Amino acid sequence: MSSENTSLPLCLLLVAAASGCAGGPPSQPEGWDRAVALRPAVDLDARAGVVEVDLTARVEEVEIVPGLRTPAWTYDGGIPGPMIRARVGDRVIVHFRNELPAPTTIHWHGVRLSAEMDGAPGHSQPETAPGGSFTYDFVVPDAGLYWYHPHVDSAAQAGNGLYGALLVEDPAEPAALGDELVLVLSDIGVEDDGALVPPDTGGSFGTLFGREGDVLLVNGRVNPVIEARAGLRQRWRLVNAARSRYYQLAIDGHRFIRIGGDGGLLEHPVETDRILLTPGERADVLIEPRGAPGATLPVRWVPYDRGYGATFGRPEVEAFRLRLADERAAEDEPLPEVARAIAPLDTAGARRVDLQLTQREGPGELVLGINGVPSWEAEPLVAAVGETAVWTVENTMVFDHPFHLHGFFFQVLGADGQPVRPLEWKDTVNVPVDGAARFVVRYDNRPGMWMFHCHILDHADAGMMGMLHVVR
Image 1 (cartoon, rainbow, N blue to C red):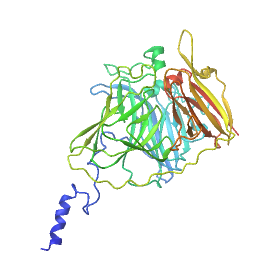
Image 2 (image 1 turned 120 degrees about the vertical axis):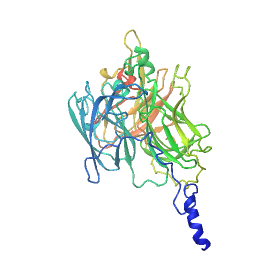
Image 3 (image 1 turned 60 degrees about the vertical axis):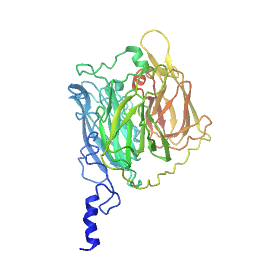
Image 4 (image 1 turned 45 degrees about the vertical axis):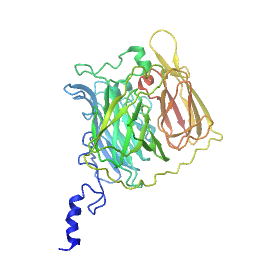
């Protein structure tokens, strides 16, 4: 037998361990994402360009803490709700039914849709009453990771488990970025008997700090394990769906490459040793795990100093783990160029919008507001389609605030008024203690009433919210 004939079987035997054989490139371990796989929404329409799903909000007993049953508020019976997957330009139709004991809506966080579909009760639509239904029907114009959650009594309802992911894919995106995972980060409060912690626990102080659940969740699981092959990139599409918790993630000895955020890809990637997500924010990151065969890499939640007492006595927590396959490291394909042309918005002649995030002093129930006025007393801001505005949001309180604008992307500006690089499209930005956030936004042709608010949902419900009326 010739040497050519004898070498082929040897190569086949070594395919699993070698990256250079003809059997194909190396891959993640079998079932690598099984512990965190999200339930897919069932598409009822076989036509290309249309995604049609049924979605029901209902109370369902789920096992969050092992051995305990918790009557959580869910979409389709699980936490998080099913992941809706679409492509840029698709029409998304969601037949929503409310089987909860309270009225609710769905807000499609970050999606540039029509105001009538935004889920803002009393403005875009009425509340959907128990036993009622509503059909959301909109086009998804932008690639990126978005999410859905209620906007009625939102701190309690989202805190009880109502949230899910919406991933909009771009077929023109570079291939070979990494094996993809959508990871919904959240938390939930569970009593010793499995019951939900009351949504008003802690009274006014709980509202002021922002209520955080004592159980950290990743795709609804407690400290799950993701399998990995050392040397092979994974692409994590992250969303912080917690009602108040800031998520700061770190892995010892590793760095992240952040390629995207709220509104899709950045102008160019940036490298960082930690990923910080305020409530409502998203991040698109690449990670290349390294370590000895069989090693476990903890992915740690690291307390973030968002104001008075936010880190005091708080240890780091293992949010989830990477377990490396018991085989030698692989060599991944070179990272393709990841770049996006984003033109800076012209601020010349832009209207100024100056806001202060405030707390009303005095006895009684805590009342927060914007420019000293709680949402239920505030008059809407007025803007015109086609107008450009520079917003300055000043923080007068002792805690950071994640500020979210419904319906429109914006570009963050530095203190000098110049765009922060790399350029990206945002819908949520952090407003630091003793500081301000500045951004520029252009109102495209989608008139209507649009919310803006702190995305610590306890703060929004306590009055830190306003309305923007965009008119033709």
